[in-house]
Length: 496
Image 1 (cartoon, rainbow, N blue to C red):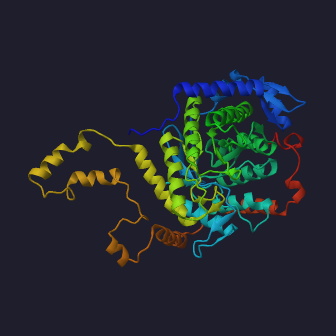
Image 2: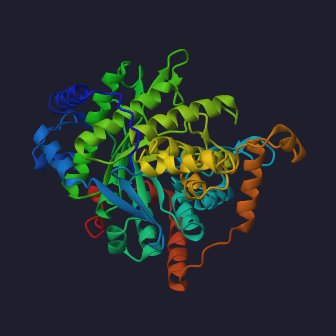
Image 3: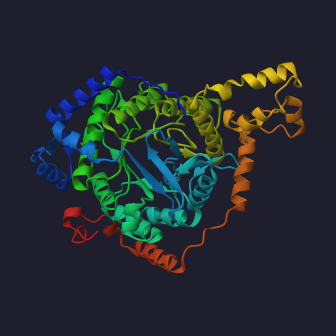
């Protein structure tokens, strides 16, 4: 099946960005504030300025690393039955794990998020047709920060058959997440063979490799879980104001993180990621819903293909504070650019206000928007069957004068036509007679329908008990241990 494709860079421009990035890596270098990572780089042949914490990486090492990383891989659900291909021509969708506020489905009021919201959101994504991964899309404000990661994985294991993901949060939290994932799925080797966890490794800008993120990166790599190396460079603030300059800088930083993962464990699945955007120069804030976000994302997809890596980017982003016209305009703009550019893993479903606010009804509308975008990307198939000459001849000469009852229509309409469930398409009078419900009204009703039908998944009794004991251990852990020292100081790291 052919697909439409948006290229915003020429091949020469891709090569020039690559060349500039190699100069940045080899001459400027990156600030690496984590000693074990600097040592990993040094042993692999990078130049390390220990006094200033700078690492300079030669192009040959970068090229070697990108050759080690798989071009495609598969994510699995908790029981291993659900499969989500990542890479190639595949495009899939996810939420994003930053919202600390939510638009209440019933009252419409903006309020802090809770653990109950986490559970409901995981249940809704489990029911979505096109959105297949929760990135811990609601960050609960009503439980201790030190237990958020394990409470979320507990909720995932009981309420979803799809993959799950979170960020790289440092040594102790990431180790907790990997252990709990392994318990839920059948052990460390099982999740190495069939990864369940999608990790977001945040890339510091400009040109920084941050200890907390690197600790998480190394542990996720040890467990074989996919890592999306994802800078959020801001043109005009933490990156050059020009999009080309931003791309050269973020490309260098992404490749440095990819290289570290491959040196540490060759073959670790990685994604070339981006959350980069432009600054709102009037206020000094970000503009994640800007048209330039889409351009940066589309260009990043081309750079990812240049290195043979899957791509993770953002779509469905907006600066709108409510479920309004601006929200629809900006999210469609960023989503279509990402889909048409061939980004493999697109996040931010269900979010508002630079992804800081969640909306459950909007998530379901986004699920339909993702379906529509996939239909656009598929383009128009032209062959003897789709040109339908014989059917046209029959209808015009001998048929009823329309195509409603034709076998050709029955064979093709479901594939050729995107048929939304929540959008308003009936005539005005029929719409009024049915209650004059907007698409958002219908989405709210659908939220309640889905949640009313959901029941927790039943886990094996031994798995349930082991997860419960681990969950309690984390809850009882002293706060100071949560922030315990670097990986190099911990006896148990090599035993992971």
